Length: 350
Ligand code: GCU
Image (cartoon, rainbow, N blue to C red; front, side, top):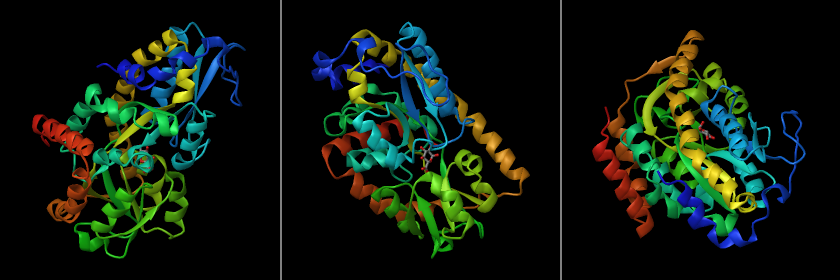
């Protein structure tokens, strides 16, 4: 993998402006007290889930390794549980550089560049292996990953697996699109996700992940859709116990960085950061399968009901117009979609 290429291409024009590593606006310390010396710059990493999530571990690992690789000039403090805000809000702080790093769900990026939609479409990846194949192809991803540097000052550092998403609700197992009729289902905040769930038969309710639990609890929502990990870790499994395997999305999460913060690093320190990314991706991806099983086990123990008797062909047929419209919109998307098809052929569903 050539992850370093992302930066070299994307921010090359701004390298001349970079400040010396230690002089780049050091801000040491934070409320949790786990910070380095006065000369250390501690990057804030915003995360919307719990400390048990593999992306939390990956963020912590990034901080440890970055500190070692830069002789203590840089580190990372992870802020879990939406402490810095929901994804759609905190991403604004990346643009202004007050938060340097964050994990984000793919759909949130569609508001900055709609071409991100290709990887967020229902049934577009045939398998997790196909998704990982594409996410490791730095050459194919580079134009997309650097596409919002100029407009938003945001660089996409890496994409990782975020499980397979399925629908869940408080009332009943879902087998067909008709079963979703009239149900208010929370989706991630983007046009593609709204249209997807509408085509699947439900009423869309886009909102930040952190607002979902109380909306489910109070009956504002009938259900939501997510991987088992998020459903259980955020306690949605307590208030919406029917989890049905629609398997409609294999959608990536991305590690984002403020381009401004990247540009303020010395070239050497920046390269050290880029060199760590494959390892960080691996920590995030490897932890996912085990955490998924643990989540299923826990949800089962509190009485959740799983339903794998789902008419997937019917859901696929419903959402096909969205896929067709979205991938044929321009050449960038067509090329990305061809890359997905290649990965699907090499990594069919098991
Ligand atoms: C997943 C994903 C998150 C995303 C969340 C959501 O958990 O990993 O990045 O925020 O879904 O539905 O909002």
